[in-house]
Length: 143
Image (cartoon, rainbow, N blue to C red; front, side, top):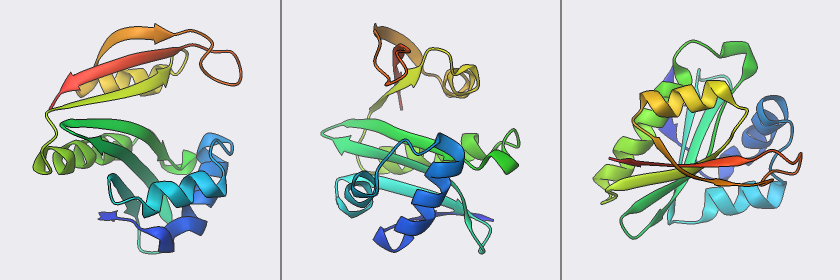
């Protein structure tokens, strides 16, 4: 199993993972943009047969804005999200980022714990940010 850089050739696998891990959060066009834009970092975790996790973010000046971290539900709670997040932060740091930001649903306790363990702190709230009406916590950390 390995963390690799993914590109547009992984589009179908990203869509399949999105459907099972994120209930179809992103459209095909959103994934295509994420994978094609050279300012974005996209990492995948694969067992050589299928994509089991992704972590993506935008590099903007000295900041990484994390856009998605997802792990296949069949392999969650085994540290794979932590490995993906760590690899994404390390790659961003190597490319000049000094801090990272993200939004996380205020009711997503597993993700909040993951980010807290990585040093993220809440910096604010976006009320009713998600389509289901839930709030987003704005989180930040120095990398």
